[in-house]
Image (cartoon, rainbow, N blue to C red; front, side):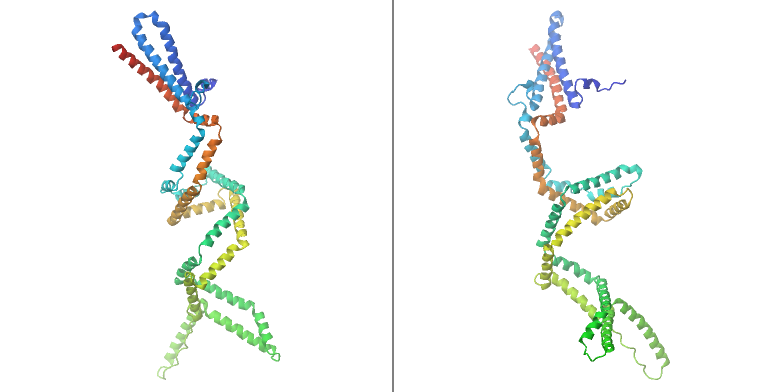
Length: 465
């Protein structure tokens, strides 16, 4: 049976690098002590080598002194040497709380300040990393990335499930509503509306509203007939009432239709036909006096006076939304406050939180390469191809990190400090000794070797004196 190279170390309880290095330093010190005993025992038997024995004794004695001194210094950091309560030993256990506070302060001053985090994240391309990760292939050879993605989603689901939905809903509602309550939204609406009107982007909306009005008139035709009949004299026959109401409905429909783009297109087609007929009549009546002029065309569609009036009214509304002294501005802000105070707002945020958790659950259960995978790839491609979006994501990430550090930096370092305070002295000692103890054992080895060399040097200088 093949024996592991570490088997001898396991037999003496030296399985970790720290314990093996401590064993080596201790064996070296014992070797110096054994050599010193051997020199003392054999020196008298070989007087012809007395000078050499003198140098060997000087080296071994100085090496033992150096090794013992460094052993004491290293051991005193973590415990009392030989269990003796010597003053200024067991430094780390005695100052555990102060070390925790100093470590927490160091973290806060050098890592968890908004300025430091902002500088560290200045060149960090989170959007690029996110885009590449989302578009990474999901082939069997790359199954690890798929498992990682699903694991992260499941972790998010577990985290979301551990949160109190009612508390989160209230937190979202309070956060959003407080920001909206303190900031007027009317100027923002006005600034959004003005360029849309100038570019004519409102016209499809107006067209839709006109179509909806025409449809509403059709749907309410019977109600209009009934209203006309109710107001007509009792002696008037019913067919007259229906004639009046039908004429009224037709007049409204014709007026609304005249404001549509379809009416303008039809007018252009009809105008072309009329002009063609006018030219034919002009050729036939040549020499018989001036022919009658074609009928004057009415302004239809977007050129209709009422349609222009709607556009002018929308422009006025956009301007008044940006004027704090206007009644429109006050009305919009009043409606905003009424909406924010509505119980439906809290229910809306609760529904949003439930929907987000459900979407995460569905994403985690979706098979690899399914709709969730296609959505992820599409999102990654959009992020990679849109520089403005990528810059916005990076900016948002930096601001979020700086905001988190600014708001929670102190609680984070307090957590570090309180955690270390909560550890018992033996735990702190074991953790630190395991982390740095291996390097400290080199100090013992160096002290032993260098101490011996210094002893030889001093002995040589004494021999020359």
